[in-house]
Image (cartoon, rainbow, N blue to C red):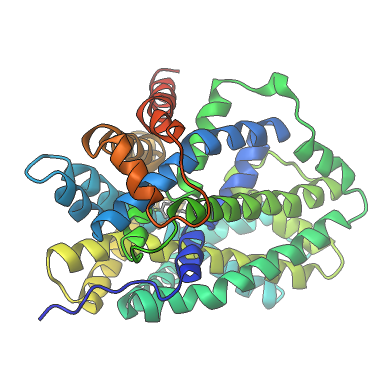
Length: 443
Ligand code: PFF
């Protein structure tokens, strides 16, 4: 007989797990470098607008669809619109989970490796950090081995299930994350010369906003909030009926924003104080920061804390990416959870190999870019925004906006969503996503 479907043991367990999904490399690795590439504080403001306009409504919608159906993304669409092709939206999500985790795990592996390199003192002052980074990611074997280790750990926890695996992991890991980031912020802002970085990060120059700023902000919002691929539908599906959807959604979005903003606050003052460039792109965390740490008092200690923070945050997000695919196999294909987890983890490990190798060891290109970049491009430009848009259209017009609002409001103890919410998910939020998608394709 099939075992009963699990549910979160407490309200806090769900919020921690979903915040664990949201807070990840998107906050620590991606957010600061995207801010750096887009001119600082003005980008942060555009990002906040996008989160309010797209992120929050979609967060509420995804949690609601999950709680309403108690199913994985494919099953959820099938349950609400049987015998229609809407289940394909769930399928985009399952595909996205597979694609994102394959390169996400490679980056997480770099983080673990940098943690050990920092602890053992091999990243000290005088190192050519740029060369060290490209040497590391360009090696054939080592990064693949770290990626394998990370996938094995993720697969193990997901194999244990919702309560014993995810619930237990996030209960310990999320408070640790919070303490680590606070330590890093205090270190950053108390460095001599920190004020220039603070100014860059907090004083907007609105003339620097372009279409590209909005585009980058939207891509960042989907990714950092884990939206558009059913990860939140899946986590919402383990909610009990008596949980509070609008309240939980606000907590999850709030915590994710807080950690992203704190990550910037930890990083920019340090980068400016020590005279590095803020616009270093994806290398910011691995090239600029180790150089910053090497020069600061107790840098080895803070460097180790940073990469520990990095790896832990990646792990709690990876759990949700894997869970989307595993929940589908468990719910729809009746596979046992440990078997599904082992199988999918191995598959993702395999897809991650060419992604890792394409960073320098072997020339693997798709559409003129390294395979690694191609996977990221795929999720950012297509999978998440299209998945998010179709989820909104489904909730607004097929399940209907009034039912979505009613279902979200059921048992809410914090606040109830007004009719404005229906307007938002029917017109405003989808229109914003369409504009951004079109701008991305044609500009
Ligand atoms: N939100 C995660 C981060 O910011 O790193 C990444 C992510 C997790 C994206 C889960 C999508 C997802 F479904």
